[in-house]
Length: 84
Image 1 (tube, helix red, strand yellow):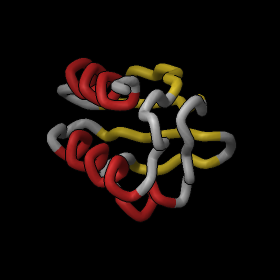
Image 2 (tube, rainbow, N blue to C red; image 1 turned 45 degrees about the vertical axis):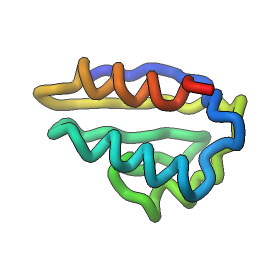
Image 3 (cartoon, one colour; image 1 turned 90 degrees about the vertical axis):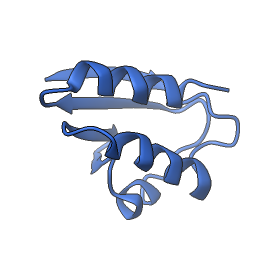
């Protein structure tokens, strides 16, 4: 399992379209991928779950990835969330 704090750098935060893209990125991997913000922890492959977080640019989240392709999954998720 890999856990990593990440600051969201997507200019408009995670609204509908960026969330859909994040879910697509996460869904490419077999690993379990979770996004934690405050006391909430949601599956990054769940569009409805991700919408409940209401994340903005500059917010900090913790990404946890567990599975056979966890290293590559973390790299891709981090790359997406930190792209401007």
